[in-house]
Length: 345
Ligand code: PHE
Image (cartoon, rainbow, N blue to C red; front, side):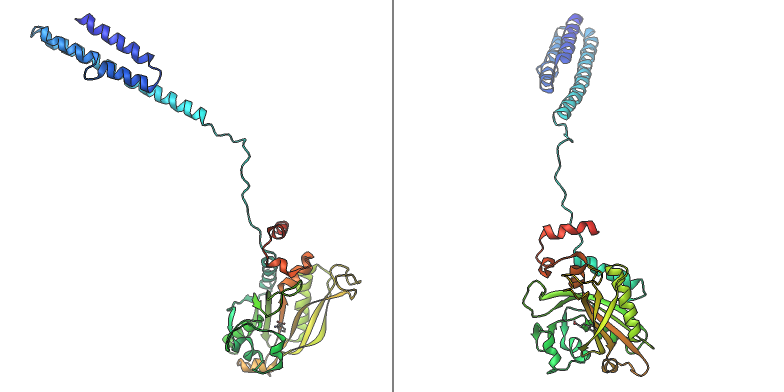
């Protein structure tokens, strides 16, 4: 009988090690360890044994069962590991395959100019102020010394939302908010960059939405010379060393005197070229000394303080700096145009 157990065991162990995959091993398990399997069948011989023989026989069959079970489990581990290796080989990641380009955006050229202006003025101790694009007539016009029916309202064709609410036409509206907020407290030194809107037909040099930055300084003994020095510094930083600026008399209701400011042409160094229309100068902004009436309306005493203000168009600066000939480029989101600016980052 013992021989029979040994025979079954050695057959079973051989079958286990012959099994080449998990399915085959499962078949072997059923064949030997299943309810009707060969090892279970050995138990049926018990009936024919004497009482004394039964325990030893039972033990041997159990031992055989355990040995085969252990062998099946060990083989199962081996086969699983082999299956995993095979799977990994088959599914190998081919890192030589060309990947997809990750599209990364670039900073918009107008943002670059805004950041450049902000850095420049922060470095001179200015604050950066903000204000709403949907503005009240009061801040955009009234406090800026442009009452209703004033002819200067025609200078800026306005998008009205209702008779008292509009899309701000200039960053000067933020200047007025800041003056009002300061309640006569000195000094004031800030810039306010932001979007502005005018009812213009879009063409190569006009856009119904564009960007400006206002600059405002109010304190004791602030003069036109301070304005000139500040703008000269800005022109040199923005357009390269050696730029000169000049003032031409102009008119804005909120400044007195008012000036248009030209910078010596950065393309021909003032000699005259097609960009500056042979004049050697390019107009870049409007500016002036804050009108005494504006100071008064906002709670400042014009006998004790004075101030200068300027408003610079960011598109104009960007067009000059990067040689762009159509303002619409900034707003049509053509990736081919915008992508050319990554080299300036
Ligand atoms: N607000 C003026 C404009 O939009 C610019 C300006 C600002 C002029 C501040 C003088 C002082 O044209």
